[in-house]
Image (cartoon, rainbow, N blue to C red):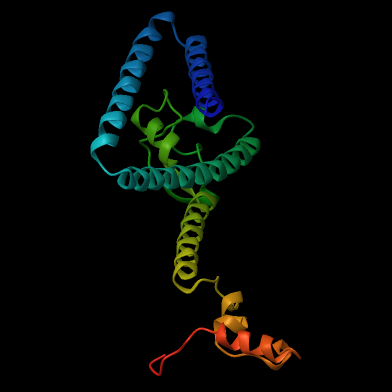
Length: 223
């Protein structure tokens, strides 16, 4: 019970150190204290809400909400990964970082573009709120065929997975597979459980046969 919380807290602490170090290398020292203090306050507030809310509300609702959030984050990660692959291919063609040209023409590959808007670019000036949407939900101001298709394929796979799990829950087996036949219990197949003495169980000693018949359970007409 000690190792799992220890490793989890250690990992989160190392991630915080890496993030703060990345900010300190690209920003002045005065830009570090305020985000750190706000992050600590937000962490304490989230922990207090979870601790107090967990004692008064059902844990099922929290698990459902957190699972839905994880599904959204995973969809954004997949779509964003495909988008970055296509952006790198466009950078190789242009011979530089196309994001440095801004959000207008030349910053994206028109051949692979589904739609494009000149605002909300998460790659410029830190991204602001759009950068948060990009990190959590995979938002991009320039959608490509790959990012849109991968996003929809992900949700189709999730929906199919839910239907398969529901089908297995109601039928007891996966689709296109035969249902498992229940095995007979030893009590039902034994002579004492069935109420019938088989020929193989008879003995040459009549007294033993009488004793075996007497040991059988008594059945009524209703049974």
